[in-house]
Amino acid sequence: MKRSILFGICSFILVLVGVSFWGISRNDIPHTIAVNGECLTTAPRDKTAITLRVTTLADSAAQSMRDATAQMAEITEYLKTLPVQLQTTQFNSYEKTEWNRDEQKSVVLGIETTIAVEVSANSVDEIEQVLSQFADKQNVYSENLRMYTSPEVLKPIMEKCLSVAVENARVRANALASGDNKRAGRLISVSYGTNTSDSATPTNGLLRTKMVMASSVADAAAGTIVSRDTDVSVSVSAVFEIK
Image 1 (cartoon, rainbow, N blue to C red):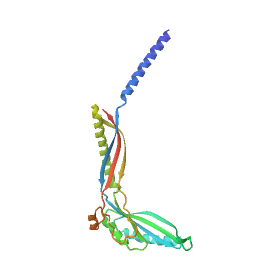
Image 2: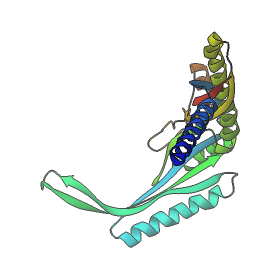
Image 3: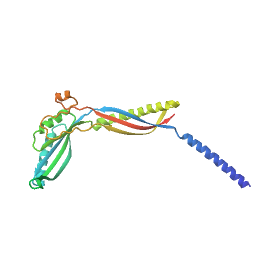
Image 4: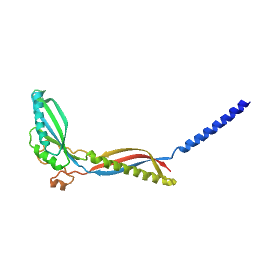
C-alpha cells in the first residue's frame, strides 16, 4: 500500500515537472518573421582590358610553337615598358584542317599554335596605346576590348549594399509587425545573393583603328573609350525576432 502511494506521488511530481518544463520551453521559442530586402547601386569601372592573340601556322608543331613563342616574347617585352598587368589566358597547338571541295576530303594545312594574353590597365590611354602598337602586326589579333570593375573596388561597395539590403528587410519587418503593435528585434539568420552587370563587350578581329566603346552618340563622336558604371544588386532573405 505504501509503495503504491509513494509511486503515485512520484508519478504526479514527474508530470508536474514535465508540464512546467514544456511550458518553459514553449515560452522560450521566439516569435519570428521572415522578409526579403534589396539594394541596387553602381560601381565605377576602373579597369580597361584587351586580349592580344598570336596565331601562327607551320608545317611542324615545333616550328609553329617557336614562331608563336618568339612573337609573343616581343609583345611581352614591349608591354613590360607600360604600366599594365599581364595574364596568359591561352596556349595551345593543334593540327589545322580544311575541307577540300575538289578532293571531297579534309586536308591538313599545318600545325597552328595560339597564345593569348590579357592586358589590363588602370588608364584607358594605356590600352589605346597597346591597340595602336599592334594594329598592323602580322599574326597578332586584338579582341575582347572591355571595361570592368576590379574586385578591390567592388568589394566595399558590395558590403555596403548588403548592409542596406538588411536594413531594408528590417524596415519591411517592422511594417508587417506594426499591425500587432510589435517590432523587429535581433536578426536571427540571413542569406543573400549578389548580381553584377559587369559583362564584357567583345571586339573580334584585327584592330586597325582606335576602338570605341560608347554609351551615347556624343561619346562615340568624341573618339574615346567609355563605359557606364557596373550595376550592382544584392538581395537578402532575413529572419527577425518579433518583440
